[in-house]
Each structure stands twice: as structure tokens, then as C-alpha cells.
Length: 121
Image (tube, rainbow, N blue to C red; front, top):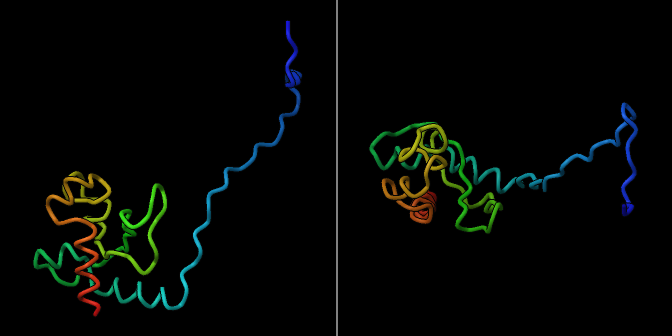
């Protein structure tokens, strides 16, 4: 039988400590980014605004179309969405529940981001 480079652990013996999985930390927003994000959040949910409901609380969504893979876009490129339209509303209502059905109903992330930028200008 071939020998491997692995040593057998004695039954009941000590285990090697596990390494923690490190995730890439996102840098904290700068003062200018915080001011911009506050202004975007004060707009309220952009989808609710388009439906005629004003003054809905907003969470900030970082669009994925501006970044690749598992990355998020810049803090300067955020879309205000209420919790229902962001993550809680279910398929066809919430962006994170189903992107294609959300975009068919309310518009793409690019269109919503362009509308947010126009409102802030």
C-alpha cells in the first residue's frame, strides 16, 4: 500500500484548528459616498414612486450589471428600493426573488439607476 503525505489522527486525539473562511471586506463608504447614499435613500423606493406611492422607506441596492460576478457596484451607483421590492416581496415583486420577472414588471436596473440619477440632478 502506498503511503500518503497525510498523517493519521489518533482516535480521540486533538484536531487541527480550522481556518476561518475569509471574505473580501468591502471598504467603508467615504464621506462623499455616505452623503450621496443618504440623498438616494431620501428619495424613497423608486418602484413605489413610479407606482404613485410616495414616501416609502428605502434600502439601497447595489446593481450587479455594473460589476462582474459576485462583486457589487460602487456606493455611488445605488438604487433605492423598499424592503418589499428589494428582497421580501416574492417572485415578480422583489428584485432578489426573481430578477427577470422584476425587470419585466418594473424596468431594468439600468433604467431605474438612470431615473435615480435624473432625480438627483
